[in-house]
Image (cartoon, rainbow, N blue to C red; front, side):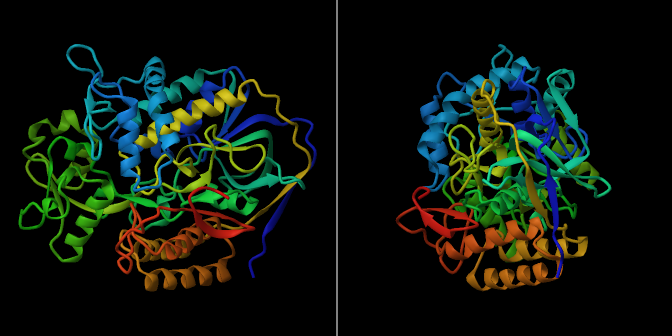
Length: 515
């Protein structure tokens, strides 16, 4: 039996005011918008080195074109989400998005411009209008994080602490969150108390063998919040990016969706285009449809390749420098050869439930970005809405907390489970990819649940196992196919779309809204 460590926090003489866990787009933008209120940001690595935000290639979606509108953007978001998007939240992020783009421009983000000086907006899958603001083709995430990092380093109200990561939430006897337990690079644990804690830790792609996420993204916030009693929603919905480069790297480099927006074609190993056989929108079909089509082609032994030799060709180095560099490093010149691709775990639609102001169901705990579940993404995230959601909700959390009188934390405690050893983690990642991936079945999910239970018996309730178990249990209960969740034994969608909600005390249930 693995022994859990209990960390006690006495009533502190000093405590942090607002503590932000995570230094991606959500965490850094929130920290900046809280000025001049004191805020502490912890990160596992120097700024920009462990955040999936920096890897985002497509850009940030917002209705900035004169022919576009927030209403249309919201409608596209709802349509992509396969019946589970909250239309109020979709409208909220669409309406507030343009202002947040202007905020990023003010911080120095060099979004691409037309010769006339207007923002150059790109079309991505399932959008009805060009509305994705990009930087140098595929450098949006890197450019945004660069601008935010520079601003944060110059901000006097922000204290940065690294390398630290959160391994548990401190909680008092009344259930109020009082900060976190940190772990440093040497494995030392210590309490870090705060009047208010905000989780901005990213997604869970690191739980899958093939992912485009940083390896540290293993759903830690979901596990920590669930253990503390927070409401979790839709953990079964994972978006698999259809066009990760299949070149044997971990994480897998991403061939941005913008390539298909520019006209790149998916072909099999014989050079035959295949997407039109799967969806009437072909390469611009929703991501889940494209991912399953590619999965089918690969499973049938036909392979899948993204051919941008005509659509981009010689312009690759200038228009898509990140993709071009990754291809050349793998020995592929995308100007003259198609890129081998395969689906990879890319974005987690589920997470810790947050209301329209970013509050979780636990007192003194907010959540923002990919680790949250706001209702914005439903069963299938609309392309480039993730960065949009992060900045919109960061602004709303800042607006709520900026002038709020926060309660001083009292004595609190937390239990900390050990991490999975590397070999056990890889076993889990293979199992999740094979049985809880693009195509799922009851037989595979049930076998995976037993495998997770065996790993927990040996290694204890590690955070990776907790989050994986929640995902598998929810996928087993959802006996239908919807959005990013596809059950080959239940290939049709039910008439009534229901979200999944679960807490540690009340188990798992599906309903139209939290009960």
